[in-house]
Image (cartoon, rainbow, N blue to C red; front, side, top):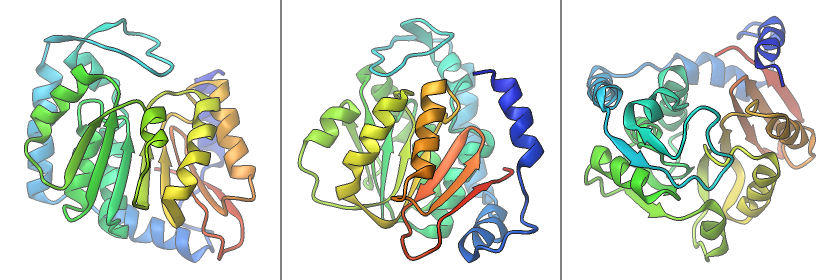
Length: 253
């Protein structure tokens, strides 16, 4: 996949709020995406990102997914943060989704350094957040930054092992940020079905990471299982929402 070419194609056809007739998507664009960070939340994130961007300490990474294209097994914290998808406009998107839709229960696949977890928690401090990280060294760093927050449960597990265990709750928002393998993504989505519901919002990171990931994204949006899908180039949003007509949108972020 030539990412630069894909981005040009995306920018050419991506829409703004004008011409959108879907009530759900119009509300998403006109209300959810208009949410901005509060001054307190902005200060919290500024402090966290400043610490991470300057942290040159190294940790050994045990990568259970497709791995990194640019970094080896030993990585600087600052480098891990630099390649994080949960910062800037994509971190803000997580904050907006959590704040607008107020999910009571959130599942995050791929804690990394806890930046995405922080955005989600600031967006809805009342949500119960379950965040999964297979690399324990990375998870330990995330816990240091997250602090002792009672509504966040950090679990050291692969996504596969987590889904193999009995889970007695349903999640309202699921953020999948890890593995980066298309076949694995489809498997996770199938296995997440029993612990999610018709209105669960799935946020899928790096849908154009590889041909495999993009093919799986297209499989999902073409499936009759999902009636709503939004392409934000790097991130895709998808939901069953069987009550509505099947619609797919390519939108600016």
